Length: 216
Image (cartoon, rainbow, N blue to C red; front, top):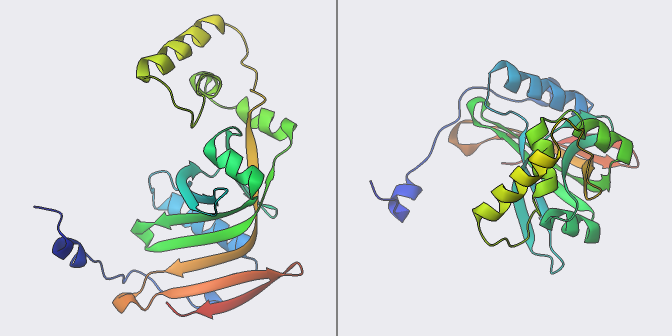
């Protein structure tokens, strides 16, 4: 099999597993998100907290990557990373982001847009201290998004730090911590047959969520 344009044009799936009506969706999109997330957990989807994080560079060009959701509440959606990474620098210049969750087994996606703020140091330290030791060392060892000479450079630095940290607590680096995406828009998308998908959209205006249906 060769990946040709013809092959890609004929690669499709008709979605038939569920529907989504306005009456099915909670008036609070955060509550609705938690319901759908629980469905993803119950369906034993591999890493249901995987999400695409989209930011923009200083020229306005979009930049996207996969990160992990590590908290959600009425304030928004949390993730953790290196503040000196490409996404950290982009968020410093332009503190707006978009998130996308896609759970193909449920034929669902959730799209989120909002402003971004750093979490406080105490919250970041609390989460950092729950991470496995090797993940803590990795956060210290990796100059994320910077050019490195080879894989060996990274592994040697990791092993050096691991040896120095034996039987010691690892301190959270000052350049590592959390962000919260405070949503202004949340869309729930349910795949439907013939590409007539259900899209229920929430917009936050003056602190109040309004719910509408969008055409697919």
